[in-house]
Length: 125
Image (cartoon, rainbow, N blue to C red; front, side, top):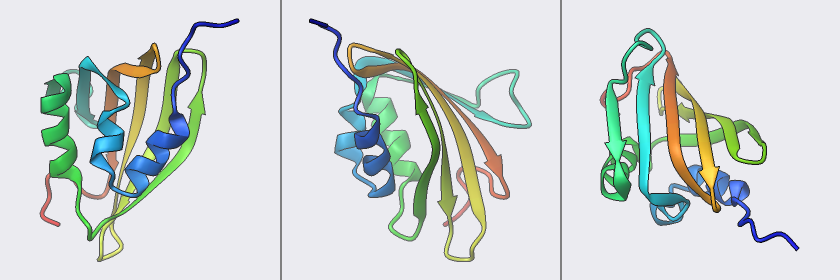
């Protein structure tokens, strides 16, 4: 019998697509670290988020009821998650990010987000 806690990657997908910040944050370890990159600047992260409080602020800043969120290409191995999230704006422009995360005991402990697409993170919505 396995004592390993499974990661709820379908729950993550639903939390992102429905803008459920609380469910999304519940999938991160208390001490999780998230590195945020732009595809043109991969040498150094543009932001490093440490702990759920910082991650919450960032998720809230990236959330808007005006945006449509789609999770694509999600794959999970034993302790790694890879997926792409697409943000569609009301003017039909898009921003996409590739997410790579390490999972331990059913929670994300380290995540790297790399933005690609026509808009830059933080552009007015």
